[in-house]
Image 1 (cartoon, helix red, strand yellow):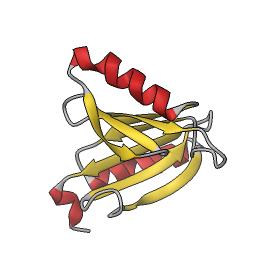
Image 2 (image 1 turned 90 degrees about the vertical axis):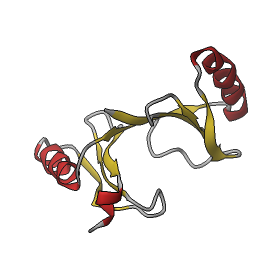
Image 3 (image 1 turned 180 degrees about the vertical axis):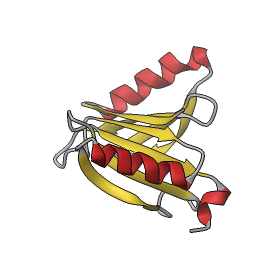
Image 4 (image 1 turned 60 degrees about the vertical axis):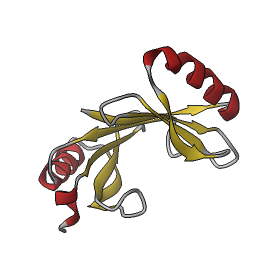
Length: 128
């Protein structure tokens, strides 16, 4: 399952207003963010659609997709398989307490350089 998708936008405030209005009929709403940096919209089932600004320091990639998996072992297996497929290493599996208390993830760059993440954010993931 896709946990969240992040896209780069040229005008963060304009895009925020657009998505707030466009998502309202769908029942999607602004969830959290940081003024001038990014905004995350709750699109149901615990999934997020995020927008991030284009700025002096470019975002990690123009597109980021995070896949929610059911265990740390799946995160680890995804990472190993992706590296065997000869993609770029963008962050070994491990806890990310700055994201959330139980967040465990890895990051790879696909053949086009997009940041692809496998992650779990469950209480069982906190026992490292």
